[in-house]
Image (tube, rainbow, N blue to C red; front, side, top):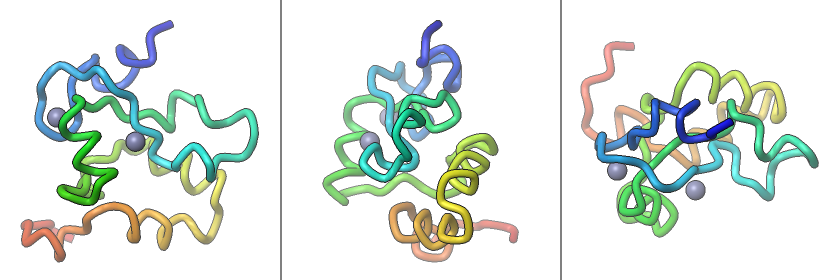
Length: 101
Ligand SMILES: [Zn+2]
Ligand SMILES: [Zn+2]
């Protein structure tokens, strides 16, 4: 099984280039043991977008995350999930984007 193929068919979720990295939506160190490689926690990214997220240069937008990414986060983090995600990903407001809701 290819984690990349199961994650956006192998394309970077941010810029659409071929992905060669797999980002942990819930960071590895925060995943309960044994869940860190759950496919629902993987987000395929290219090197540039992955690096930019972790250095803080250009954070991944919250609305880029897939439904199953969010479901996984809520499953392992419970009530803390939304706060966790909001602190690590860009919300529409901060990014000046045009989120409808
Ligand atoms: Zn990219
Ligand atoms: Zn990452």
